[in-house]
Length: 161
Image 1 (cartoon, one colour):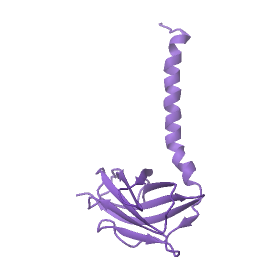
Image 2 (cartoon, helix red, strand yellow; image 1 turned 30 degrees about the vertical axis):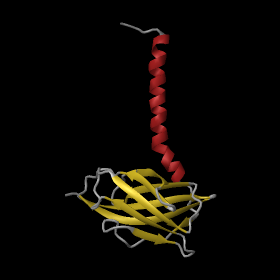
Image 3 (tube, rainbow, N blue to C red; image 1 turned 120 degrees about the vertical axis):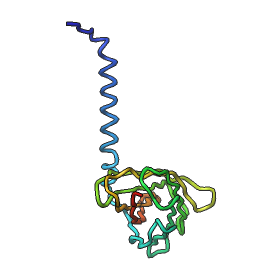
Image 4 (cartoon, rainbow, N blue to C red; image 1 turned 90 degrees about the horizontal axis):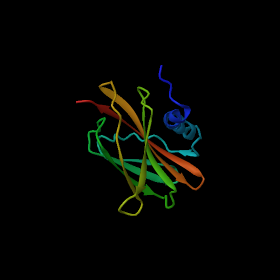
């Protein structure tokens, strides 16, 4: 029987611990963040993102318009996201999050950054593949504004060709 000295096992053990820690952070990190209640949630937009840009607004006039391209929206297809802000001048952080409503697809979060035009954010995203031929999704533009979070939800369906 070949027994390795302890000093040869340490790099392997260290790699194993690092991989396990990374897995734990990826598994629990989003859940910890999402357990915080949002300060403000806009009403659900009745618009279909497959048909073009959709707008969601709060009663105080703050609003976002979300456009995803190309359409129709399909899983495993790179998407370009464009968000136009209204009444939101100072945004500390912005993300676009996709959540499967028919089936747990995990949380798929993508950063949004300042766009080419004022009051515009953009980013790249991708929907995960699903075993269902039709899947209902919720897209949420989440903005950190000061100490508050504001969420603007949109729903849409994907259909595999």
